[in-house]
Length: 227
Image (cartoon, rainbow, N blue to C red):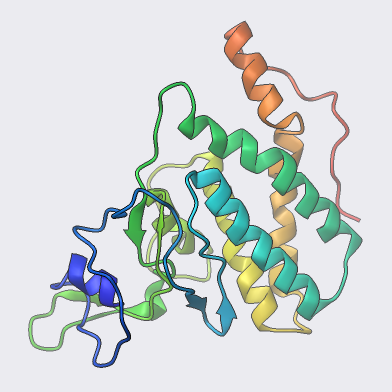
């Protein structure tokens, strides 16, 4: 919250208590790394904010952490295990690695990390919006839109639709881990099988498309189905 306040003092309330934290300028990672220099929490769950050189590694660490916590708290599920493998080994490389290859670069930006309607309000004196209860990190700017996707949130919906946004169901992993015994959010997470079915060739499929200059048909690859 201190880092966010320094970057956006008119949007973020000044924290009344805080520990030692370096000063960050305008929300851009000062050392060019993704993650965060200190651990942050989403609710009571610790995030993996290990500082990384690539967005693919940073996102992978974050979602792997919540897959692990969700399994610890909800119990082992074979379909979830297959989904986890597909997301980690196929989908993330396919959708995120291409953002940082062939001369492209993602600039790590400071994000709130949990920007849904419950963490927003309005200043009573000015009527201007304010945000709070962050679990910040330096990330791809699209990451900030992730909590907007679940239908239960009222903050609004992105105007565009790309496959990377479906990775936003990662936030439902956190919700599932927060409520042991309630499998509602686990069932929502399982909808990510659509991405595994769409990109079963992983980054190799993307490389083939670049060579052929046409989309590679992956329809004959075995599909991950619900049990």
